[in-house]
Structure formats: structure tokens, C-alpha cells
Amino acid sequence: MNGIEIVSTGYAKIEKTLDNQQLEQMVETSNEWIVSRTGILKRHLSDKSSAFLAIEAAKKATQNQDLSQLALIIVATMTPENNTPSNACLVQKALGLNHQSMMCFDINVACSGYVYALKVAQSLLEENQYGLVIGSEQLSSIVDYQDRNTCILFGDGAAATLIKSQKLFFSYLDSDGNEEVLFSKRNDYLKMKGQDVFKFAIKAIPLSIDHVLNQAKMTLNDIDYVICHQANERIIKHVYKKYQCSSEKFYMNLQEYGNTSAASIPLALAKMNEQGLLQKGMKIILVGFGGGLTWGAILMEW
Image 1 (tube, rainbow, N blue to C red):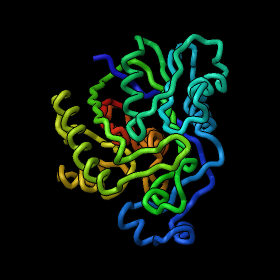
Image 2 (image 1 turned 45 degrees about the horizontal axis):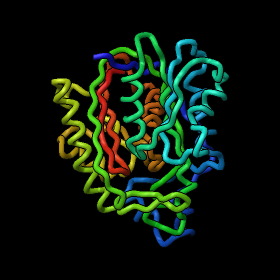
Image 3 (image 1 turned 120 degrees about the horizontal axis):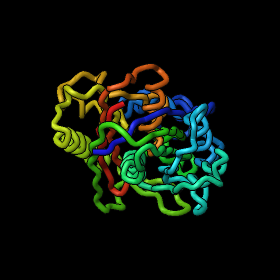
Image 4 (image 1 turned 180 degrees about the vertical axis):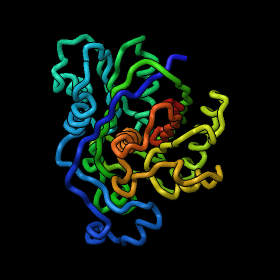
């Protein structure tokens, strides 16, 4: 099976943060309550749009890279700067590639966006072609900071991966039309039924992991890291306890960034790469789940 290789990563640095102590002054909550139920300590908030953040991440991921064979830019986002043009087209222009022949488009699969985007890129790239896959969100633009059910969870972020066609790749993606559990109507705030999301996620994650393991004829022992959508520490803990495996296999950085939707998985990849945790030949499972409802996993080799 024609797979992908991640060539480089990059993420947008957002200086402004909102920690739990600050939220205590805004809504009826407490640091202890937030940490015990989510594991989140703070989140980053940007005054810039998701397109600006995507561009910053893309510039870092493509620094010192030959982009002559770049055939595709996909931005996964549920908070685009415009209805049109897409964030991806704005990235193309910012990189000075607006006269280079390529496909550029956004996809909105909420928090599953990055894994969906990787699968789309894998299916479109031909041999020796490169693609740029970005998750970018300015969730602060759709969060009601008087709603403690959502404002404690979400942050802004963007991360990019430059990929090329190669290596191991197995995928499982699914959806179930449901607009009641997690939704954001046009010009309105994000709404979420937290308990329903939790029940959905603890089923969707192991289902997705098992699907790609079965395709690859592997077990979780063959996998170096599982990177779940960074939504809630309790969800991820529930999953690794189910598999009776070490917590170290399930990377988490949500304590620093909160839930950044489509940006969470590429942001985790970029931070792991920066920290030197990822070595060539490592096998990794990426798992997304989110509004739609949507979910899925990708098994790949670093």
C-alpha cells in the first residue's frame, strides 16, 4: 500500500495564555475542578486568525525544504478565516507558491480533521510528490467565555506536516450524522454535551485503534506511540487502562494547550519531533474523534 512519510513539522507559537486561575475569575469554576475532570492547566489564545496561524506553522514546516514537487495543501479547520478563499489558498500565497500548479483546499471534520486530511492527501499524492497537511484553529473566536462547559476546554493552535508519498499506511475513518452532541452554528458559539462526548470517545478510540491494528496484522505492542486527539486526560487514561499498557505510549500535551480541535494531533507530532521523541522506523497510530460525529485512526511509520 502506498503510504506517506512525514518529512518535517512546524507549529505556530502563540504567546498569550489563559490558565485555570484566570478562568476562576471569569466563570464559576476552579483549578482543582478543571484539572480533575480534564487534566488541562492552560490553553493558548490568539488574536490572529486561523489562516495566519496556518501560515506560521507552514513556514516553519517548509523552512529549508525544496517545494518544487509540492502538489497539495490541505488545511483542516472548523474556524476558517473566510467562507472563501480557503485557508489553504492563503497559505499557498504566503509561501510564494501561487503560480505553482497544485490543489489547495480546506476540510472541516472538526477534531477528526487532521486524520481525515492525511488520508485525503495519501490518496491524492503520486510517487515523489509532496503535500502540506495543516491543522489550524482559532477556537477562541467561537467559544463563549461565560459557558464553563466549553471555555475550560478549548484553545487556539496550528501545526503543519510536510509529507511525501512513501512507507507504511493503514487507515480507518468513519462518521455518524449527529448534530446534537457537538456543534457550532454559523455566527454562534460552540455547544457541547460533555458526557455524551465522553461516552462516544471511549468507544470510538479503541474501535479505531483495533481496526488499523487488524489491517496491519499488528498488536499494540508493535506500536511505539498512540497520539489521540488531545481533548481530555480522562478519556485518554480510560483508553490506555483498557489496553493495560503504559501511559508513556499515549502521548499527551493537552495540559499545556487544551483541546485545539484539528490542530491537536499535528501539534502533538510537532512537539514530539522537537523533543526528539520520534525516531525513524517508529510505528505510530493517530486517532481523531469529533463533531459530526466523526472518528478514525491512521497507522503509519515515522
